[in-house]
Length: 177
View 1 (cartoon, rainbow, N blue to C red):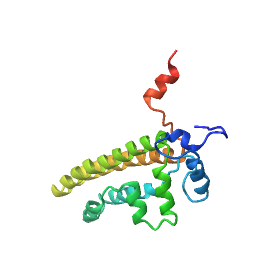
View 2 (cartoon, rainbow, N blue to C red; view 1 turned 45 degrees about the vertical axis):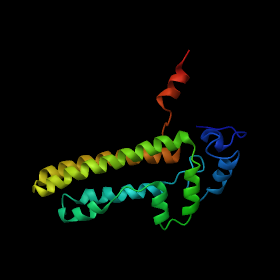
View 3 (tube, rainbow, N blue to C red; view 1 turned 90 degrees about the horizontal axis):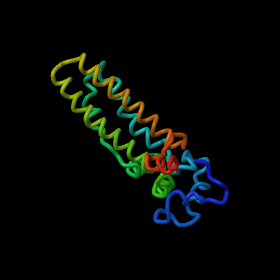
View 4 (cartoon, rainbow, N blue to C red; view 1 turned 90 degrees about the vertical axis):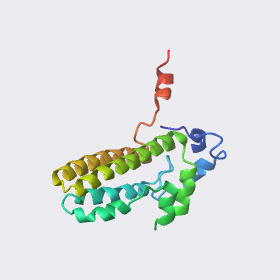
């Protein structure tokens, strides 16, 4: 969403999210820090999901890695950065707390979909492993990793500000006569 020079990043977030000009200041502070200055989001968080994808991809060939996959747990954006070695983790958390809602809401919906997909898929994978059904394990792991790759790509687009984040109500307002 292009913005004119006289608008601040906080305009998109709403007055209850940031103080006037604060979002713009954050946009300037995050430049060069692997945090998008437009969205105030960092792709580093997606590494959390890439970890489970890598485990799921090797499970059909190495079912003994199931315990490693079972240990994976959803983490909030803030939890991920608190636990990470990301050099600007406090800035990443502050930026996320002030992320414009037009990016934050679709990002959080996408993250929720990834977490739900992993939970459902893990139950199916555990059943396949317990039943010794390697073909089913291959199918479920393949479907789940494909779904997660698509959702990670969507989340990455949101982080980069390149994914269309307009909700249906916004589209309806634009299209109204």
